[in-house]
Length: 437
Image (cartoon, rainbow, N blue to C red; front, side, top):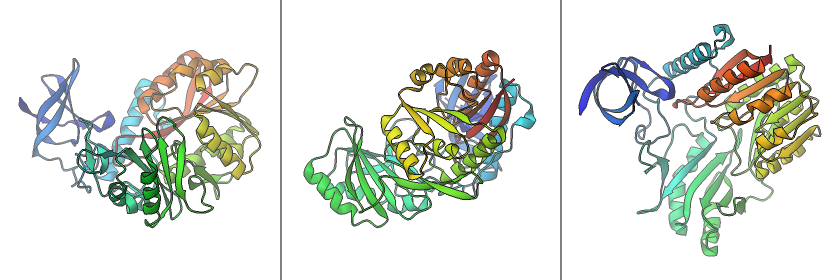
């Protein structure tokens, strides 16, 4: 049954909030001030989820979404809102979550920072391949896990976007119907892309050779990789002579005016917005220098995105990472930048931090996945470091973890800085400095 609601405000995850009979109704792709006819898609005890059937009176805050795939593709949630309002919304939601749930002084929540680009910022993207009729390459729909084929994507970096339309034809020519996913990454700054195909097992020899031949016909591509999920490690199908194993990107270090270069290998996590990543790195390094931290423990270290720059301002860095391939990538980055003051522990962060007994650190840096760091918080408290820098991509788990550290470890928030790393989406990045009270 359809009914009419007035969207009162926006909430977490970019949902419009309305009420019906006292019950909250969450409406995606809505804007404050909308009057809309909606239909319940999912009912819960405390709230309902609904979809817009018809806009009766559109909000004045709306804009025409620039992307023709918006709403069908599940990648973006906020393109119908102008960028100034997206950013106002994100800052307000983040500020409310931190001040209300963590009870910190509002002045400790800094203004949202962002780069100049609301589009064209993603230097890496993974797409899905649907072979039911022909190779359709695109992103998943928000609800039913169907592939929406796309030949363009406005949030992709222009280099990545330049070869997106080539992928479907490439797969069709090679009859590579075992391929289920494709990732495209570009250098920053730079001129070339890497393509990585994913399949359950290695492809037939003739298919791999055909793909190798085709990719060399595509401008702006420097390498083609295959990840067979049963083998996990990427296999080089082709790359330019003397080309690095991954994409290159630069980061500030020390004085913030000079740059070092890191390499991100295929199938290793990296930050997808290199411009905002630079801003984050500059602030993290300035915090560390201000603290005078010399003995640093880094958790969820990945391929060294923080590890390598931090090693220039700290005396020693101990980095823990569960992915052995990412650790190899990190060690290669240390060698590239002549860093000899880093040690690695390869294994789960939980086991790695438990193994630390007599070590002492004046700073812990952690960049956990979206689920947060709940499983290691007791061990962090046991180490009794004076300072923690928490990099987060999910405000809800950040709030939960800060509450635990505050209650059981006597840590207080010194400052927290949000970033709009993912314009057009509800996602929000932040860095938080906690100090022992």
